[in-house]
Image 1: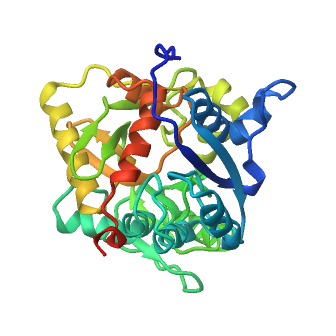
Image 2: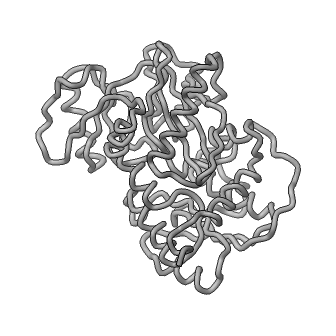
Length: 351
């Protein structure tokens, strides 16, 4: 884990940190287990670090009440709302509407704009946009809810089955990789029944799992290419970022899950990946900060899996770690994200 840089002086601001009502972080980590901390680590890291930077910080737990946000904005008049919400009323795609509400309040906020959130969260639509721009992405099909599952000959096995809209690998496990029509039908039905969304089915790209962090609105900065690795797993375990790989601490220890700077990438491949990620960021109208997920096949061709606006900001995780290597300490990364939020040219600023 990278060490925090020497303390820098920052202009003091009032920062309203928007978090899920169940993830309001405590004042201290004392008395909490590693597993408990993982639930709200990102929220704790952001809130505690902003306080250390000298800002006046108010965490606000939100579930389904916009009035709480309106009240804080009207009475406290924060300089910036640091948005860590990934859903509203339990619906993941509603985060775009919450950001729209902040714009209606003329409240500057961190992270992605409503249009970028909408496009990136709809994985099928985003892949159609990438295909239009000739950005390589795995071939795919969508199986809507409450419709019969009919395998298509346009796709070749193995295939990966996931939700078309949910984030954080919800519903993705090793069983998500299917190798025949029967398994495809079963897994699509699983997504329909348990995730309650349309199912996205795409060709599985055998290869390396790579991530590229990007910050910026119009002028972009890319972070070094990062890679997901299973240090303790054998070849029988497919290298995919399942929900357990992302969130199950014991499972991570068992497989030796690590994310590190990608090694042994030829310059030509690395440069092509960076350009591909910048084109993806712009094609989906992203702003603030995002992580682009890719698969690198054995022939050196990279495929964009998806774009993740407002990725996990936990200290020590891949986005912050790659930012550290790019020259942004954790404090400076948060400062940069807030600066981008305050300078974003929302429509209300033109009035």
